[in-house]
Length: 139
Image (tube, rainbow, N blue to C red; front, side):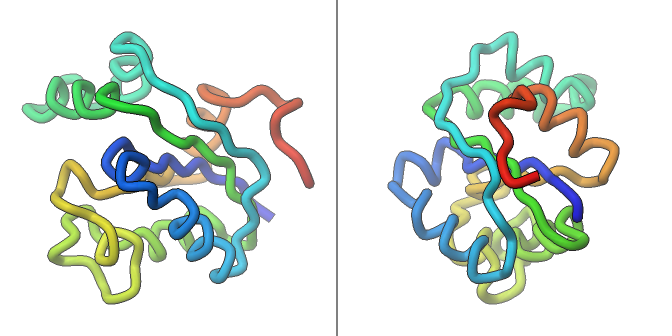
């Protein structure tokens, strides 16, 4: 069983979609083993998205991610990194497959409702950024 990080982004939290997104996650046989609502500081956002610091969208991304509360989650399941990425759908909601989170709830490339780790290695780094071991259950 693998773990991965999920973030329900400010656009989805502000539209009260956390429960609907959680329902989709659980209907796809993925367990939510940790979850909390937080508000990122600008320093946290810049650190978390540091891999993108040379990209043109970096400042806008960081500003967006601190614009409101987010819900960070640890998800558990078989091949959960790739399974959750499939469930999220393409970054651009217009290009996402039907019945994916981003197709159903995403507003734009930036406001696409969710983030998920892109690899097993990054999932560990990302989970450790937001959660201590005592906050993750059912391991």
